[in-house]
Length: 361
Length: 227
Image (cartoon, helix red, strand yellow):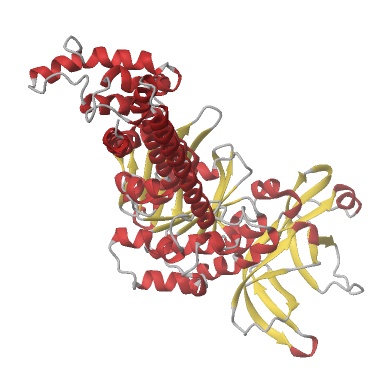
C-alpha cells in the first residue's frame, strides 16, 4: 500500500497498566475490524486515531498528517475529519434527534439540507425519529442516530467503538442490518472495534488482530481468517471467511451452488441471483476429514485437498488441520486420535466433509 | 415607628443585594467550578477547601476578616483608597463583596457537581463533531449543567437574603445603605417592637418557603424533560 492510499499508524502509548506499541497500514476503503480480547488496546487505538488520546509516533491518513511527534504535529480531535461512534450512544440529552444530527453539520458549514444528512438519515432508517426527544428512543434507535450523526458531516474516516456492545442481544437486529448496509454504501474507510466474532465475520474486509497492545495479525479477512493466530483467539468459533459467487441453482431441491477459492459448495436457496457476490463462513468444527470420498453420507459438500500442517488446538486431544483445497486453505478441527487412526499428517490427500456453511450477504 | 417606612427600604436593599450577588456569582462561580471539575492540578484540593471555608466558619470570623481587608489598613481598602473610591467597609459595595465571598460555595458546588456528573464523554462527542473546546463549553457543557446553574442561583440568592452575621460585621446597620431585612428584624427586637418583628419575619418565612417551592418545581420539570 502506498502512503497516499492508506491509513498509516505507527504509535506508542503508555499507561500505568497498559501499553500500545504498533505499526500498521490500513486500506482507505472498506471496513477494517480491530479485534481482540478486552484490554488488548482496541479502544485505545481508536481513541488515538480520533485524537482523544495523545500517543507518540505517526498517524497519517492519505497525505494528511494527524500526528507526527518528530515534527511536533498533533491535530486536535475537532480538527480531524472523523466520525466517531461510542460504545454507548452518546447523544446530547439537551437536544432532540434532529438537533443532534445537525450539531456537527453546523460546524463544518454544510447546510441542513446537505446530501450527507439526508443520505445518512435514509441509510440508518431514522426518518420517523427526527422530531423525537432522545430520551424516548430505544437503545438500537439511539445507536442508529449516533451513527447517522457521525456520518452526516461526511467524514474522511469513520470510527466505531463496539457500537452493538451496549445493546440487548435481541435488539441488535435493529442495528446490524443497517451496519451491513453501510458496507456497500460508504466510500469512506471505516475502522470498527469489536470482540464479537459474528460482527467480525459479517463486516470485516480487513482484519487487525490485537493482543496486549501489539498487532498479532493484520490483512484481508480471507487471509487472516485462515491464520493460526485468529483461530487461537476465537477458539470454538474458529473458521474461515471467504468471498464467493452464486454459480448455479438447483430449483427442484431449493439449493444454490457457490464458488469460492477452495471449490464449490451447496447451500439453501435464499433467492440470490446467479453471479451475486456473497461471503461464506465455514467453522473448523464443522469440517471432518476422510481418506476416500464418502458416497453413503447425508453430507453433500466435499472438498478435496492436501494437508499443509497440523497443530494442537485448545486441548491436547484436539488438532487444527490446515488443508489446502485449490487456491485456499480450509481449517478443520479434529482429534489427534482420528488423525493417527487414518495415518494422516502433512502432505496427506484428504476429503473435507463440510457439515455446514453460513451464508453472509 | 411606621412599619413600611423602615421595612420597605430594608426589603428593597435585601433584594438588590441578593439579586446582584447571585447574578455576579453565576459569572464568577462557573469558571471556578469548571476548572475544579476538569483539572488534575495539585492546587485543586487547596482551592476547593478555600472556597468551602465560608460553609464552616462562623459568619463573624469571616465578617471580621473581610472588614479588616476592606478597611483603611487592609490591602483592598488601600487599593480602593488609592483609586479614589474611599473605604468600602460600611457601604453597600462592601456588603456586596462580603456576600459574594460568603455565598461562593453555594454557587460553586452545585455547578461543579453538575459538570462532574456530566463526565468527559459529552465533550469528547462534541470534539468528534468538530466543536472547538470553547464551542463545546458553551454549546454542550453549559446547557447540560443547567440544573446545577439554576440551583446555584437560587441557593446563593436565598443564602444572601438569610445572612446576618457578615452583614452586621461589614455593613453595620445604616438605614437605606446597609440595613437589610435580617438586621432590621434584629433592630425591631432590640427596640422591643415585637409586632413589626413578627410581621417582617413572617414575610421572610413566606418568601423563603416560596423560593424553595419554586426551586423544587423547576427541578421536577427539568427531570421530566430528561426522563
